[in-house]
Image (cartoon, rainbow, N blue to C red; front, side, top):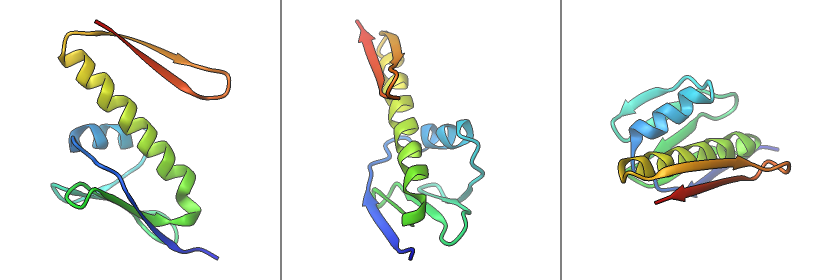
Length: 103
């Protein structure tokens, strides 16, 4: 049985979120500058920067986790580069990603 879930997730940069969704191959609708909607099966995935939330169906938990991971990784990469730092990214065998920021 599916059910709707709403989790807190701060999106500080919607451009980076849009790029993360494109990187993952998701089409989305920009409802307004702070709300993105991904059309998905039973319930759409809604990313709301104004409310700092993501709303989705529990069957899409893996998808939402991947979106959050990709956004967070890209956000910190972008931030580090803007600050003039170098990056080293390592993907471990268990899928864990380690991002090292070299100053």
